[in-house]
Amino acid sequence: MSKLEIDIDYIAQLAELLQRTGLTEIEIGQGEAKIRVAKQIQTVMEVSAPVHQHAPQLQAAAPAPAAEPAPVSDAAHPGVITSPMVGTAYLAGEPGSPPFVTVGQEVHEGATLLIIEAMKVMNSIRAPRSGRVTKIFIENAAPVEYGEPLMIIE
Amino acid sequence: MFRKVLIANRGEIALRILRACRELGIATVAVHSTADAAAMHVRLADESVCIGPPSATDSYLNAIAILAAAEISGADAIHPGYGFLAENADFAQMVVEHGFTFIGPDPEHIRIMGDKIRAKQMAVELGLPVVPGTDGPVSGDDEAIAALARDIGFPLLIKAVAGGGGRGMTIVHGEEQLRESLRLARYEARMGFGDDRVYLERFLDHPRHIEVQVLADRHGNVVHLGERDCSLQRRHQKLVEEAPSPVLDSAAREAIGERVATAMRKFGYTNVGTVEFLWQDGEFFFIEMNTRLQVEHPVTEAITGVDLVREQIRAAAGEKLGFTQKDVRFEGHAIECRINAEDPRTMVPSPGKVQAFHAPGGPGVRMDSALYAGYTVPPFYDSLIGKLIVHDVDRAAAIRRLDRAIAECVIDGIPTGLPLLRALFAEDDIRASRFDTGWLGRFLERWQG
Image (cartoon, rainbow over all chains, first blue to last red; front, top):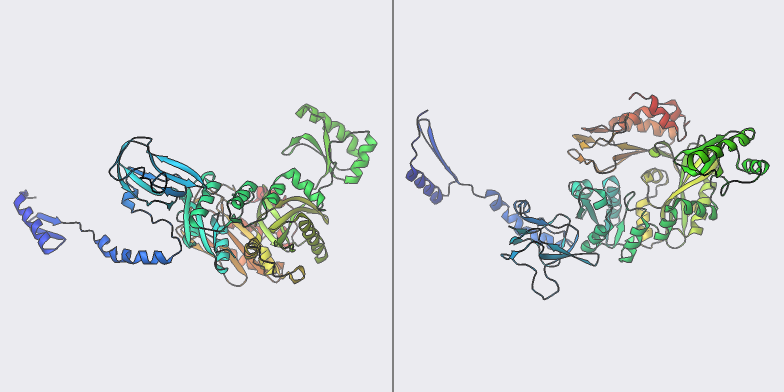
């Protein structure tokens, strides 16, 4: 097997070509040596986008749909906080008051993140660890299921 | 009528209720544990809510979670199915207090019949036959006790007041043994439990289990829908149920049915219910009442043509029963077999992945099951995975139809009770209906599988 000499500039040129042409992959062989430049475009997302555009209309017609599950990648995030119970989630202590937490906010372990009401009982959901809130999956007064992702604390 | 019903159950019964709701034009909400996210009742429901982790205590038995699910989904009634919270009077009460309708009887009726002692007292008050016995511990001279024993009849049991669970019982076959047996029983009770008080009760040595189905609306109308014979049991778990009972004639059926209907009218009972009896040599003895829909309700549906789940939903919604006792007809014979995910010889549960599933079909065959190919039977719940119900013109024809249907049924990937069911219906005793509640236990001791 012949030794492959890596020419960074050459690869950079190929990458540029890839961008310009809109191709997803370029592979060039010389003897046994091969250079393959590829980009992972999110084909699945783009293809499925029109489906998502229709989805809200269908849901609007359907009676009170259960909360839309969060995308798998977010739900599988190590910092995700899931709902410990079924109920209605409130992001603020009372209507009109500011939310307990907002995206970007640093929280300390034990801080109230939101309230879940189940059978007229208000249950404070507290931060299991300190960190920064990077995502909030739910809207105020949204119904939540057991195990549903609520927010991410990193 | 309800707009939306939450089904607080899983498996085949959740599906059964869902089907009844669909036919009534009612939207359905399935609740499920995380282990049941891919279950059929979730897949077929209009909406679903995950209510907890796999453990039933934290999900299907979690009253708060179920009520919260009803609240967020906007359901107006809750159907409990059987098992789980179906006979929990506190749950029924909570459902009502939170403004939902409980599809079942009133909490108070559930409470009374859920307490063994109160239930028996109530049965006596309502004029239902109970196992004859002394009201409390026996005392007095030998002749007085002998007179009590003659009233009860032989064989009888001398039971230690402090005994229970099969301990502290002596069988007496005739009056000549009574004196000596009583002396011994008292001595054993004193040595065993530190309490020599004993009472007497008729001993049923070859009883059958026969139960009467009732249906009642909220306007005082009560009908009985005949009986089911569920004598094939092991460890008090029913395996096969049939209707009508092969040991009752139509006069006996009418008599016990009328007696139960009258009792339920007096009780003020509503919705569906089943009064269970032991039956021996022409006599009925009350055991308990199940204040809910039963697993074996399809055999009654088969011979009467009455959709019990539809009727119970209608009754709970306050609608009037659409028929009277004289409209109730019993046609042909129906048999139900419970198919469990378990080793048929050891009875060890066998959860796992179902590789292939084919439900039997054709005339007179009904399969109630939430299985599908690729489904994994979770290890957390009851092992019942299907009910095979056949209906035909008479018992012999129904057995032939059952043989045929069992042969068609395919459940690959996990051991099931199908081989046992097949073996049972090849037995002369079963074909000739010569069995009591102890028969299946004795059969399993000799069955090689």
